[in-house]
Length: 434
Image 1 (cartoon, rainbow, N blue to C red):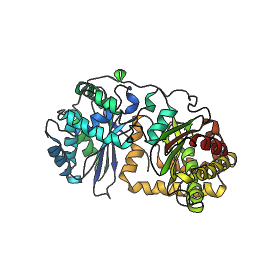
Image 2 (image 1 turned 45 degrees about the vertical axis):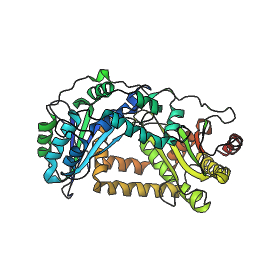
Image 3 (image 1 turned 60 degrees about the vertical axis):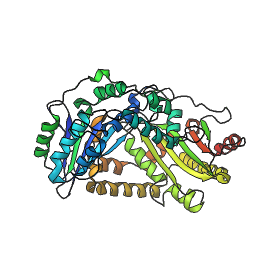
């Protein structure tokens, strides 16, 4: 499938229409360039707070019940998600009710009534408790790893904020954030499914074309990614951050600085990581779980932003087997760094990657991710272009990338669990295997 061209409404809002006539639904997705990367420590969590407040009601539907009912009468449930660099709202609509769904979405984004602010704050504080233990310590692995990788930078902030930052936010601040970031030039609208391009553009213009911005892009805060930071932590274990948490397991995330999704090596990294973790016969699943029976789950992936990122391996293990896990995982990562993936691993990962390219044709969300989401910070890439690039990658190129990325001197390890006085020495000894 070639790249679907984008269209601009009269106010600059970008629209992508992905016609899938075989589908019996339409995925409506609105993506906004705002997230924790655009925040300060004092206002950390404000993008997420704003996302929640939009569900509290607006000029057409004054409360959360009537608002959600209006969306549900057009198809599915309205979903929302705030992340580091964007906030997304999505709905699966019945094709016969698409225009009403789009009208509802326009009012939802443009005209919140800011009801029940304190009630929503209480809900958000309850949600934050999932990330903290009874001692009030942050235990979310991804958030802790981000703090270590990007200290003193917005990339190190938690998406949901902290209890103190959420407690300190005012309705006036949230309103200003809405005016600054929720503007047509800062939004991408995608419609995918049983929808015709001309009709969809007319609907979008009717309901969103009259929206005029209240702020300019120059008023939006954005800090470029910093240079790689020196590792902090205990001198015995540089780069290691331990958080004591009474549990019967240790939860670990191994993170290495990497590059973002605009880097020319982005696709090669995706293929490389599949050789480590893509199906039960990939290396980490086969060795660490199936052969050694050390863990129930282990996952290798990457966190990618527009100008930086990380490679991450996350897993959990019972306390008495922490040393065994570190020894075996360290051996595998060291061999992977020194020798790269085997040719058979590369070919298997490539086959599965190319299968997924075809499978994605049947996924409305995957098509939105391909054709619309990149317009926030990047450029769309066609399926055939991606297929050719993946087909051209060889073992030597992937091995060179593995040698560069999995440098033990760049490893950041986050450990949450039953840490005691013996843990630092154990970590120091076993990390030598990496």
